[in-house]
Length: 253
Image (cartoon, rainbow, N blue to C red; front, side, top):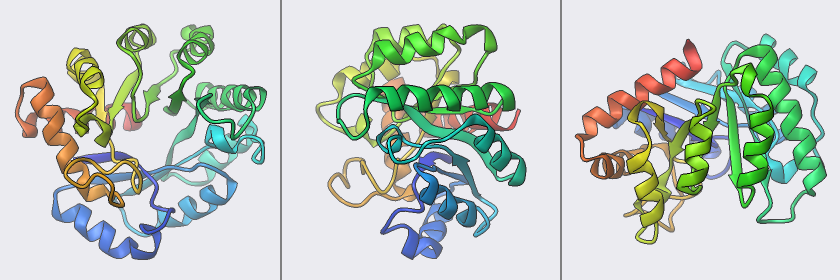
């Protein structure tokens, strides 16, 4: 089992990292991918990946942080080359739900991350909220480049998912799929091909039922795996094997 998206550099996970890692191993997690969201975040991520062989990291700027954190594809590529445990780019993307960063900065940053993904052939981890059309239109411009796309914490519509599948995208299910009001999202994950699905916690955020409202951590991914198995009408072990294989195919092929 692999948690394909967590934020180990955020509290309360960071100060309890030894125990967080132990609890992850205790439930059978083999890898943790901890995600960069800003320059300061990446500095922490670059250190955390050395804490245990199971931990890998990414480099990128969250759309909320793009006003204060300008980034170039050259900077991303340099840091990918300098650390073999940094295996992905992001999280990047577009978030027009909040006004934490203006659209121009978000789009410019997104394109820099895309350029780095093309040049490095590393997976691009995408956050998209209230920006389905814009996200797809930009990605579709680069269709011929065969970008390795991972839609993190996917909560989009089924039509959006259908369009992204034309780009060969992968989709990560978070604890949101366990929420009672997530019927539409559950139907979307039921529709998505099993070989295009990963699982994640997005911890310390979005704890799954029965821990909703608590601080999330990677070991809670077991609940998401079980719910996805229920949605897909297959066994949890099949979900674990499939999502693990999908992660390894995306990040290590």
